[in-house]
Image (cartoon, rainbow, N blue to C red):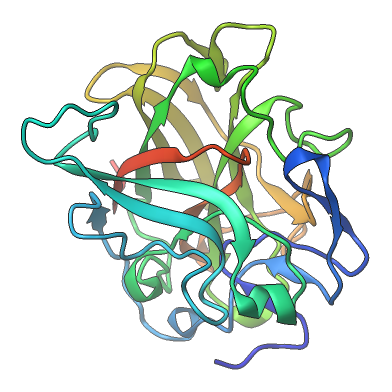
Length: 311
């Protein structure tokens, strides 16, 4: 795999030379090398006829398709993902949203490549599918939908603190989880330092409240919730909606036309990109979801990662 002078890897936070990244406990760490953009390697799928791939990962047989610090080289990243199996009539604090297994994801150090070569201090796993299969070389004709079940617990309020809620970061002060979705231009030369577009959803745990908040919806009961991104073509441009739903239940909240951002380190900025802020679907293919942030110490339960064609 050949990289440009500036490394870019799918779903990784941009960390530029001398830029301080805030990590758990308020510790300030400095990334020591050149920019690592929120993007991708010189992606083979962008230079081929890679089709759109429908995919489901229920974590019944492992965590394939998600990458963490134990994956070596530039495809690996940071943090940890663990499979949790709950089989038979065993008493368990948490049951899967479906089947007999789920996974936990958590923030942590990066692998040797990102730690020593790029100076990235830490992060959380990302899910581009097995062998990066979720990147297509053209926009799916009917758009596509990406879903992930996440277990939420209002008791997190006052217990955990997110890593990036500092002033002017663009993140909520009390965001303890930040899920993001990213799409990628099909021509890697159009945007060699890929810093977006990223579409963020925050789980906010205000210590003065007894409920969590997601997309403006109060979460007062612990349980599994479906985080759903709906990617569409509207008048020739990429359009993204977010839906929060109860697992196998009603839709609780909808954000239409989610604002795209790019990243400068952990700071969210209005998306500019290679097309003067425009996002023509003729220039983009499908992408993946990833965790921009998970509060240190929080082992976040996830299940039923589903990618399918649009409605």
